[in-house]
Image (cartoon, rainbow, N blue to C red):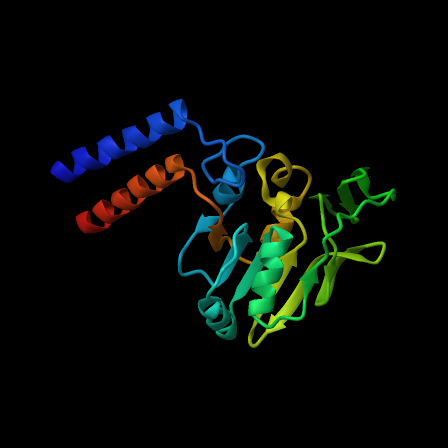
Length: 221
């Protein structure tokens, strides 16, 4: 009975926090607005034991050993983020792929405006806002010799690099077929999502209560 009351209180607190103190941080899973990633999280079943990890980098990772082991075990990382942080990660992993520092702006049939590229195939359309060219790896999607999505095999695993993190935000994720394509390359509905970025105090509070709720739920089973 005590656990039920605690769980109910935490759920009510989380709901009230979401309603009265909405998260406005870019790429936050709790941000329901255009700049958040709530649609990304809601479109997958989140699992810490998945063999597919979506890794978004807006800070450098100083120790990449765990990710190297993860790939060597035959798993997949779908990688994106700030190009400087992505390049640092790739360098630390000794991967010969880089993301260029120039945003692709081409007046082709594929564009929405000069910085938001619309990529068309027969059965789907993808949106790549503010995309940087990927140099190296095996191209999966290219426009006018610029690579937007590339794959690099690492031991038994592979890294799929997406040239812009804005591919994942709510404003574009549900636009056209971005969500469908991400599920296609993931080849599973169960993924782990890891975001390296500064957290707002609100995000930390919400995450704390989510963790407490999880622990109480496990103990009650």
